[in-house]
Image (cartoon, rainbow, N blue to C red):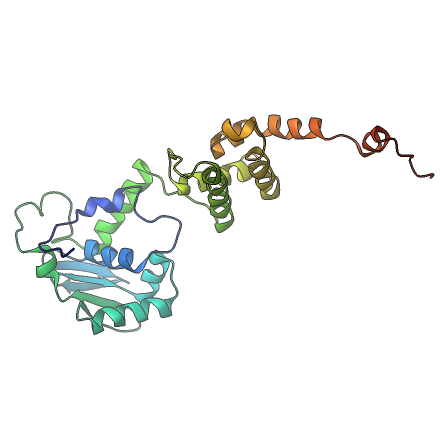
Length: 252
């Protein structure tokens, strides 16, 4: 199917929980990040203690900053920008201290109608760094950034995988990132080791009762002690097992 025409993407998507958090960006997300952060109108920007005149469709940043933001290596950032340049999507100039990225096709991507773009918080006559700080502050107050490690994320994915093995079309009520954060809280705030968290995840999804009554890290966290006590009470001591089948215990 061939598509034609274009749409605008509002900058407020940067404040939305669907925007990448706690993981590496895809190439598409990295490009959209550039598109959302370049200046809509010529203005001023401060970066690294220096002031710059910024053109429409331009962003003052650095490979180091982009690598941190996108969770890429600096080499991957450089190769991606070179790829965009080769495709005649953007140009890059600068020094070891900063990089100026200019979208060649910015007018094509965004049009030139400014009637709705100067009163809703977009980057125009103010600096990129100031506006980005405002966005970050808003994120911190209205939607705190989730913090979790790859281990937490992997456990969240395992939990969801075990559920979908039984019901492939199961509808999850929250994102895998929020699950990873709940697992982080279980470890850090409740002082539960990851090995025990994993053991409970796997056990609950095999138990005939709990597999339908423990379907989220929140429930697992709330019922943690009860679950471990249930497992312990169901374990038959080794000596009783041997006696139960009529075997003699070895002499000491």
